[in-house]
Length: 241
Image 1 (tube, rainbow, N blue to C red):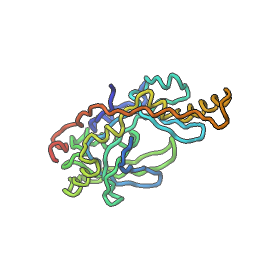
Image 2: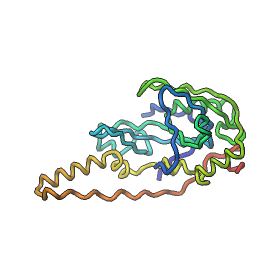
Image 3: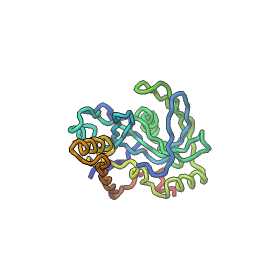
Image 4: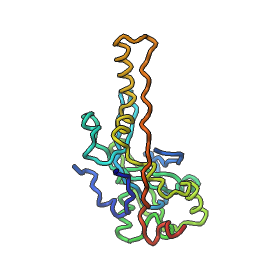
């Protein structure tokens, strides 16, 4: 089974974006016109995310295992290729140092990855890690992110404790939150509501009572496979907790 994977910071700058479950955690939403100061924790996870608007205009998302091979896209030619995304745990310096989840496109993470590639210092390490400013400009496809190094910031003991509490002591929480959906789950998440309406309409037309509706199918059970440990390194939390 294909799984969402942890990646090293320096792999972000090398990844090609043009190649042929959220739990109770708080997310940091990057909004245009704002500047955010964050402190990454651990390494990021990489995944491919489908974005699809249903007929009502509601945005639906799902995570798939490949940008190029997806049986759901074969059945829905209007579905665009998934976008390369990354996510990591961060400390939000602008919000009382709360621990949050940052999910964003490659353009946000690339400068941080390039810093690791140039210096060898882990941006998410407890001792070597650093603060970064993210300035967001533009809208939609024209959104830009100006990411700038601020300073090296070793984690204080209270910060380390806050991180443990935020992720319930589970260093693999990101992999579980952004796990790859099965084809059945992708179909349900992106097109499930539309299929239910079509089924109900067909049932009514075929002669069912005006008060009868087709019962919604039970959701596909979600399974969590065995999770591997994140990337190691001398400055990883494996050696500092």
